[in-house]
Image (cartoon, rainbow, N blue to C red):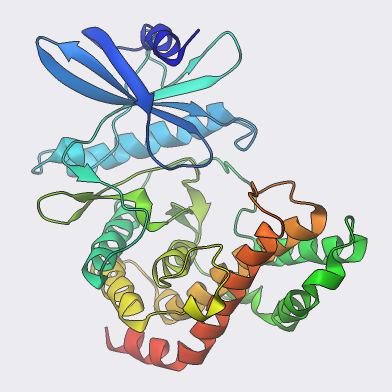
Amino acid sequence: MNLKQNLRAIALHFEIPGEFLEAAPYGSGHINDTYCAVFNQGGTRVRYVFQRINHAVFKNPVALMENIQRVTAHLGGKVAGKPDASRRVLTLIPTHSGAAFYRDDAGNYWRVYIFIEAARGYDAVESPAQALSAAKAFGRFQKMLADLPAPRLNDTIPDFHHTPKRFATLERAIAADAVHRAKLARPEIEFALRHKAICSVLLDAKLPERVTHNDTKFNNVLLDDATGEGICVIDLDTVMPGLALYDFGDMVRTTTSPAKEDERDLSKVTMQFPMFEALARGYLSSAADFLTPAEKKLLPFSGKLITFEIGMRFLTDYLAGDSYFKVHRKGHNLDRCRTQFKLVESIEQQEAAMNKLVETI
């Protein structure tokens, strides 16, 4: 069965009117399989996003979809009546039985969203103005979910940002040296060991638990084509309980450096202060009124910690034989680790200025 035939069959289970016309792979995500499908509805071409959830990564798709259903319904209520309300939150299309997903005969889990038109995600930030727009959208996302009613959301990936546990996993990988690579990564191992003390800072600060996105890459915000506004936060699979600073820290990690995540020329890796300033101003313009003083004070530190954490994860995977992250060349995970650790160094060199800036916003 080809892609068109397969998606046409999947579409029959969802409340989508009209005639199925065509479908093609869509986006640049690495976890789920994403497609854009077009339907003829009364002579108008209407697009939908189909996604097959990667249940090897997300072990409990039912709990994941329960989270997304609750979160999108809550956000939908917050934006109801506002201009472009239907473009400001992802809208799930239910199955004919009213479910938020469909499980096919092969055991795959499928969901469908309305396609948000006249907006797009960018794989790389192009300006501080774009960074500000994205950070403002992520801050608004957290703020709107601050009063999500009980019960607590499900943990879709338990301990996802538990940095001390990530460090313990790295220590085990170093000790095991399963594929005899420790000698090739000695400087990176020593860098990680020197930074052990920072791992528990956020947890020790006793910050309030929030509903957080947990994957705040720049391309997980759609920017309006006409205005450049961050109009909708997408990729909600990791929305779960966490610390607000996990989200801000990941914004710093993924937005402030002009280098690719696997850049081999480390001279290109640097924390660009204007990008950090844009993130801080954008995020705080939305989130300042619900953050505690401790959360605000630790914003710059969070960028260093989350960058260090993902660097540790790349190093752990390299030492363990590249079993988690997809690699496309020899030493790929070590290259990724080095870019993260170089960015940590750049953040440390500018941390005092970052702290001073946040104090003034």
